[in-house]
Image (cartoon, rainbow, N blue to C red; front, side, top):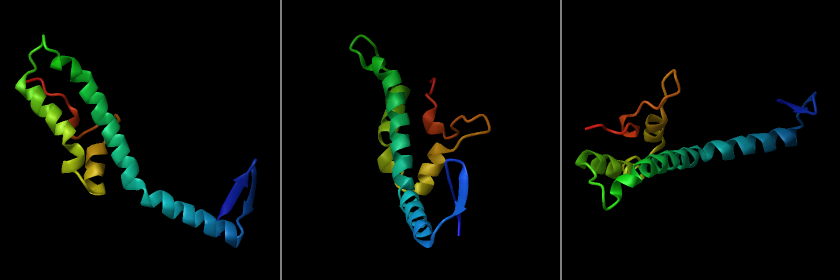
Length: 107
């Protein structure tokens, strides 16, 4: 059995507490893909907002930005499993996202 720490006091969990803890862990782990998808959609939205100004009528949006923005909008549909989510969320040792889809092209 595991231990529980309440207000700095550690004690062994009862069988019922252990069962509840295990159930909570299963529930948390089963929602992993959903949490990752929420994070991906938030990052996508941030990048789209950063370039929204380019869609003003007095600005000509370059084709490479149009293509990139469409790729971002297509992310959820084109990456539908948790393994793909892990690739999209991968970071290097400096905590920078490594997947190329997140980098705004310059030409």
